[in-house]
Image (cartoon, rainbow, N blue to C red):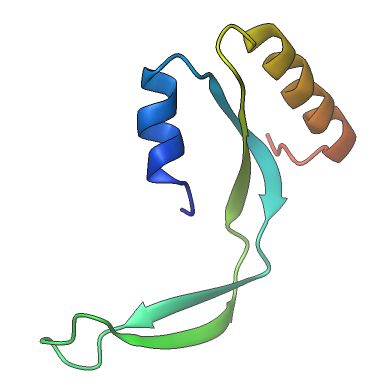
Amino acid sequence: DGRSPLAFTFLPSQGFPALSVPAGFTTVVYDRVRATPEDTVGVLTGPIPAALPVNIDFLGIPFSEETLFKIAAAYERATRARVS
């Protein structure tokens, strides 16, 4: 999903707030397919047409939750990427 393990496991547990909001959809997807059952790397395939959701992550400094919510809300209003 592209998320940084450091950002979403270490930082929030250390008091750094993180917020994820919708950012739109992909138009194509690339994937890896195993050539043989023993294949651990796979072969890159694609592009395949798709419409998978994508998020944007906002990170803040400790105690900046109010500002982080304002930034995320402004981003959502400007992009209108959320689909009900």
